[in-house]
Length: 218
Ligand SMILES: Nc1nc2c(ncn2[C@@H]2O[C@H](COP(=O)(O)OP(=O)(O)OP(=O)(O)O)[C@@H](O)[C@H]2O)c(=O)[nH]1
Ligand SMILES: [Mg+2]
Image (cartoon, rainbow, N blue to C red; front, top):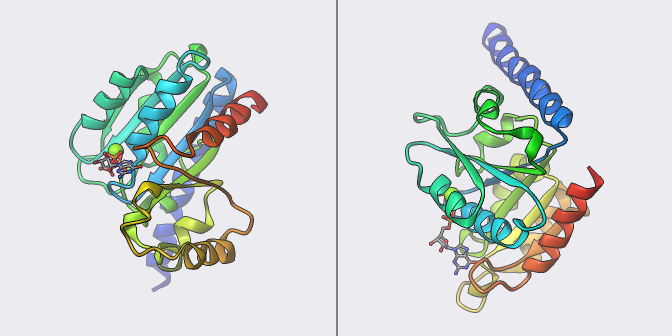
């Protein structure tokens, strides 16, 4: 049904146009921005908490939190020391560029170095809606299983960095790292990857170093 396909294309084009505007606003203010995507519970907010706590003395950080209903995650980001804004999507399974566009004026962008956007927990829809952020970060986690790159190729194909969270659980959960990495390699060769644990702190330093470099380079 060609008409139906046309409508979908138009929606995506409209989103991309606003995403471009968001990028221009962020660039104009000199803010480097990340889109955190992951399945529910992978550890997006945990990584935000760790990142804010560690880097808040060297970087001015804000967090925009996308959630279907609550402000729990924005509260956690604020408690960690970030300026935090909550977007309730009212049931939508992803953030889109318009939602981010409406949230940006709540922030004093000129006085920020880094903006982290936490997308809604979902491995499908967020991959289809660019926000205008500079880099997309996928947070995978051990309990999700080693087959996820194979099953959700769209998400793994489109990201700029991969965090593998909850490595502290590797002794307890069957997870073949080789099989997982094979799937990633096919979709996104040489993807920069950070195996870490937000629980124990293991592996966090390389992530902090990479992120600091990215902000400086911007
Ligand atoms: N064992 C272990 N648990 C973790 C780790 N990181 C996060 N968790 C736990 O995983 C659960 C989910 O973490 P969140 O940070 O809320 O995950 P999220 O991706 O933000 O979840 P949603 O926003 O609901 O999609 C919490 O109970 C965390 O304490 C980790 O490295 N190891
Ligand atoms: Mg969260």
